[in-house]
Amino acid sequence: TLVANRQNKVALLTQNYMSTHFKTLVSGYMQPGESAEESAIREVREELGIDLKKENGRFWKMYAWPIEGCEGKALYFTWVFRQDVDIADVRLQNGETADARWVTAQQLREMVAEGTFIPYDYLEELFSRI
Image 1 (cartoon, rainbow, N blue to C red):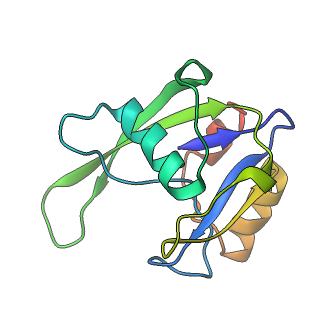
Image 2: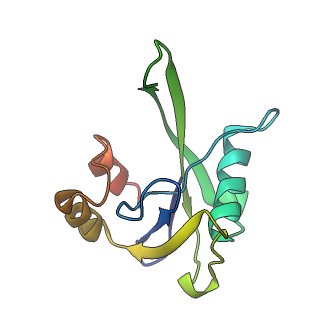
């Protein structure tokens, strides 16, 4: 889930269970009976303590990603939310989220070049959404 503020900066976080070296967008799993949009809003609330407003979001993209060791694929739903949030108001999820920050598209490109953010093939298209 991409959360962008009015300064066109994107919220990135460090998840303890992945690696403290990599930064990522908010992500998670859908719970039974939950829509993709409800899941995106819940995960942002859980990981960053930000209460997103439904009207500030829109569905952007769905893609399939191979599951290691399986023949199947996982479906990923990407939501884009534009909401004015102060990083000082972020409340990190204890034990899961180690750090959060706002970054520009250029800073994110630099992180990809440095190897600290996954070089998703849709990043440039995503930048056009913020």
